[in-house]
Length: 278
Image 1 (cartoon, rainbow, N blue to C red):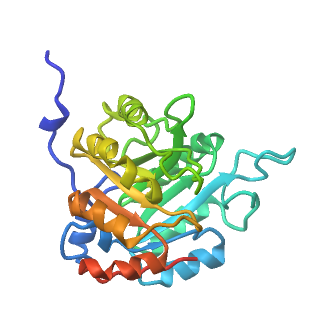
Image 2 (cartoon, rainbow, N blue to C red):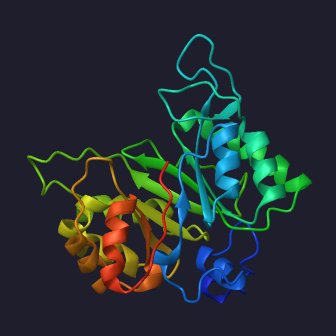
């Protein structure tokens, strides 16, 4: 019997946890075309108060940080909580966050795992939740895996998701040309290329233009691939950088997880963008 070719598989509906974000938002009539620039994000919706504010906000996707309670202290537990280290305690658990968001909204879910130890217990909770509630919208799972031992996300536990595997990075203004290399993107492709999921690679926006030859090669390897541009608070991302990326890619290949001022400047592209940064 010949192996099943992934390209021959029937497409699944976008209204499920492994669906395409742009297809999902099109179905909801929240966007009018497949363009990653149109997706609006709410960040760090971690505490109960921040989560409630995010649920009331007119945005499309919630990004929240997941770590273990008391991470890296003698009080560490295996309970995933919603917090961004160095904060390691929270009034909100992953279980409560998922249940609340699923019951009270139709917003896309992005979980950002702040350390590898958090991934396993979190996937157990996702699996348990999916057996009790219908996860009827795309779920992104983000973790930095390179440099790292291997892909930390055990996809057998919760395969119906979009993976967001990234590289650990450090931007140094004195060395602006230190960026992603062909070897790095080839190594990443070798790790995830045979997986069936949608995959969006989080890349530091300030490093993308000088690495475009390599990143565009990565995009060309699969129709399931996209990039999510992210920005450190002090990273000098310019409109010119974003215009270069946009002019050299397809609108559905790039998501823009950036701070408000740079996206407001990006109205020059002809797309009106609203963004909430917390």
